[in-house]
Image (cartoon, rainbow, N blue to C red; front, side, top):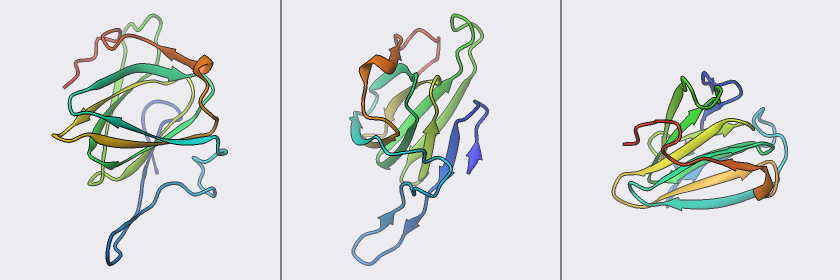
Length: 146
């Protein structure tokens, strides 16, 4: 488990277990520190070059895994009205097989990389609730997307 510079954000290496006929990909165990409780699991797809940014959850903790394709996640702490924003970049894919844990009140966006659509598994500690999500335009933070 690796803590990133943003408080509470964690990158956890996951196991890929070789099995004849197809691998088993570890996701999340209830015994791990990043697990608080189960609320909802859902998959999101993102096309190559597409950008989904920015949002922050005010209640939900997300555990994100990319078993198919490659996705760039960009995280940022809010600093005033986005002044002097620091960015943390995290690349997730089957080759970089990790789980990204994002606690509440951390801004993030993501971009599909490669030539095929990517698949993101999101394991949240609460069921989806649009009232706890804050959104900003993809250009709001001044991040230069790939």
